[in-house]
Image (cartoon, rainbow, N blue to C red; front, side, top):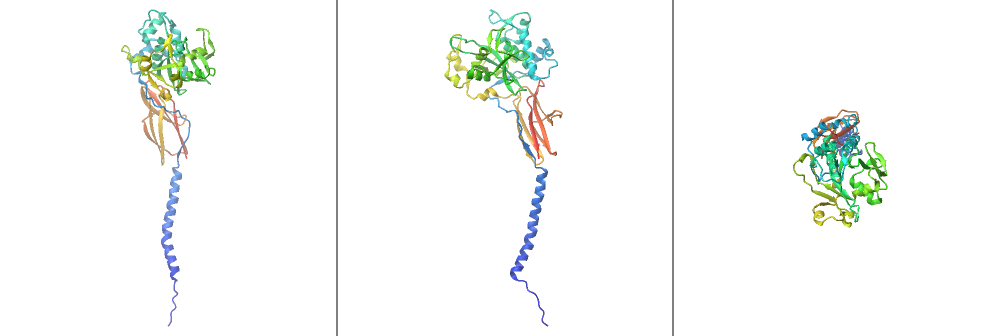
Amino acid sequence: MLIFVPMIHTREFKKVDFMNKIFPIALIALLGIIGNSCIRNKSNYRISGVDNPSYLANTEFQLFEDLTSPKFGHLIKKYRLDTVVRGESDEFKRMLLLRHWIKSVIRIEDHSDHYSGDGYAEGILDAALKGEGFHCAHFMRVQNAVMNAFGYVTRVIGAGPGVKGGPDGNHGIDEIWSNKYCKWFLSDAKYNHHFEKNGIPLSALEVRDEYIKNKAADIVLVKGKDRIPIEFDSEFEFSKKRFAQTYTWIKWYIYGNRHTIYPNKYNGSIMVYEDDFFKNNIYYRDGKPVPKEAFDSWRHIKDRKVFEWTPNVLNVVAKVNGQTLNVHISSETPNFKEYQMKENINGQWRKIDNNLSLELSKEGHAYFFRSVNLANVAGPEYKVVVIK
């Protein structure tokens, strides 16, 4: 008997064999791709860009006032400074109320054979309350102490118009760090005023810019706690232009512990901003150029950012890893107490470490971070928004 057995062509056999081998592999790979895609969809978080305060490191300024010193609490209690700001929660308005109080207590006396108080804020205030008058440097020292007592970061500066033939005097003032505006602003306690542009208070360096540019035509001089704009101060017979001219030549004191260190000697080292104007002009004081030995003793700084460093502002590094947000926080907060965080605008602030991992589970998350100092003054908020 003949039996017919169908034969499979060799080429067809190899094709079937190949498909049998490759299909399971392809299927596994495809399932893997689908699986990975599902995982990515579940954890496809990214950080959304938002505006945050810019962080600039402090590279030159040294030794801030020490808020653990009992001197500051004593100052508040003795002069009942808490009553000056009672009921006011706005930080900037509190600063202006305190400055206004200083001006109301201390009488101006620019030329005297004797000034009481040994240059110390408490001694100055005691004598002032008895009617004694003082000059700008005394107002500067009192404002420095009072602002720090409430946890506000300050720095002491000297300035003058430096014009050959006059005016060429020197003026002592403070700059205060505003957490509200996230910037330094010039605060003159003697004249109870500061400068603004578009409603924003200006630093001494910014006032200088405006004066050199067009004699301060684009800025506003505001006086008192109510920020009243004035072109001419009839009390002192000075114009806005003349006040602004004072900041043509500015000197910053490097060490910031003037009140804390008393009665020990204060380090009066100075630095200046060496820009083109500084290099190409002559600084006159008291009728003659500033002596070369004094000029050379100052630390000459060419980087403007040195003077624009940002106390209390956070330097935040945030990265998404799967369903986790990893955050590292650093800052230069004088008298640092703690970092705080809240989730969402209406959340509750809570203390955190500077390194933390946050679980992501919602469609979107909004985290707010800030530093707090020993006076419980909070720095500018830093926001991190994470979305799918």
